[in-house]
Length: 144
Ligand code: DQA
Image 1 (tube, rainbow, N blue to C red):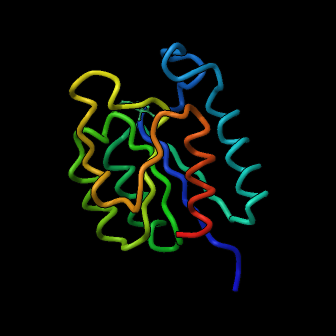
Image 2 (cartoon, helix red, strand yellow):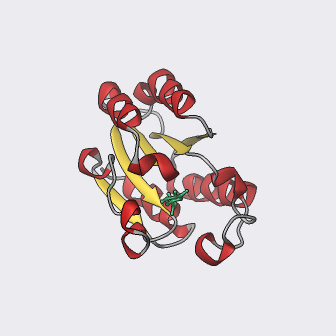
């Protein structure tokens, strides 16, 4: 058996990490985050592929084309978490286990961030630990 494959998907504006609302999302930039993800995946013996898009349809295309080849999808749908039935449906269509991830604690912020279209179809959610949310999600991906 080969290594477990994990597809990490970052939604809109996450490419702006390190520049956007650093009081909420921290100083680590997008490339720095991905470096940490690759390192952590290596330590855990996971094979990892990382994708980002600012476009809803493109995120659907990524899920459709690569989602079923992965054992686990770790997704931070960013603002689409709260709006996108299309991303939810794409995740359901590929039948791959999902872990939802958020850098900030979406329950401690504005009311409109409290609802997620992904939480109830995910195996679990890792929310509010800063960039470490992704590392915790990778750890979980080893054994779900
Ligand atoms: C986010 C939380 C979302 O509400 C927000 O729109 C984001 C990032 C997070 O990781 O904390 O862009 O998903």
